Length: 445
Image (tube, rainbow, N blue to C red; front, side, top):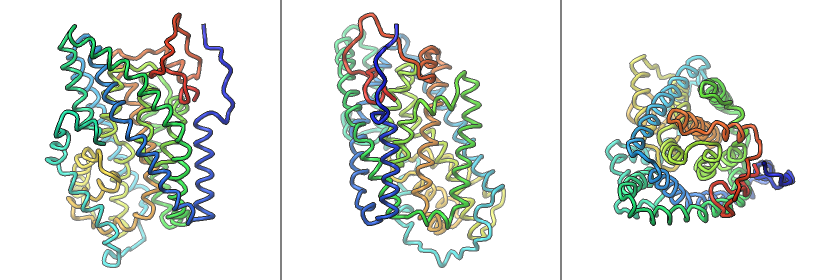
């Protein structure tokens, strides 16, 4: 038996509303730049609303998932499999960016003089890059208090506390059952809150894109169109060819997955932040048949360690700067750049403007490429951040399905129904609570 509810009018679908908001934002920013820049608080407010709910969503999903595992050693197994996947494909993304930079040569012929560049424009990013030291990163994962992780915005701290609490709760046995039941009950209102916040997504997307176009203008793209175009094309090929092959091997279509997540992808495009769609991604991946424990571990971890788009950007941008400033790089220099980028990209969690900051951290360690050259791409970085976020988002969605399949935690029928946009079967006694499977605003997409 299937849900026979009448389909929603097209204008009530979230992805239609977000797409319309993006178009209006572009038009306002282009024709009325001052008004476009004034819309920035709308985008910032929406991002803050989403970040407000990220910590409880991750905590509840992970704790409930681990507490429901019959064997606790599976937690470590899932984590190790996810990290192996992240390490391989993140490194591959770095290599792809390096290869494309050599083939396309986006910076060749610019002959930019480093002494003439505005080094003050990138000084703030260089200062922030010091936050990405390995020691600081490791210590930053551990919160000052148990509850401190839940009131901050560091995803890794929430993940760390949730895993430990979930393991402790599972070891309590019967005495921990009331707590498990309480947390499971709390999941319903928290995900209902997610649905309520998503109603503001079009407003947030409108404000963010209007600000971007109003402040930087479309003209800035023409100056560095070759770099921006190369990055977008490389990311597209990485998604369709590399991730497409991975998806095909795992038994699903990456194009159907993209269609399934179209509302979230448009939201990421509008806000230039993949975090804005994190709660929705966790909900939709669980609805698509991925086990709750796998979703809870893979998605938040992937947001810190599986940044395919950021990695492509880092090596491509670094070589662009070297080419534009006529800086020769030996094979040894490029290998050093690759190794440093592998480490610095893993420490980007919780740092604002992570892509540009991690690039600054990488160039600071590899002095052959002038850090001041980052001023060449500062104007178009905002446009490339959208592509970085989209690629990161799709990469984490694919990783979740793959790891769930490896663990035997993938309901293939549910995945096929979700990707083919078929209605879900109605349970004999449906639960009317608004939980992760609630057919609310996002379910209609």
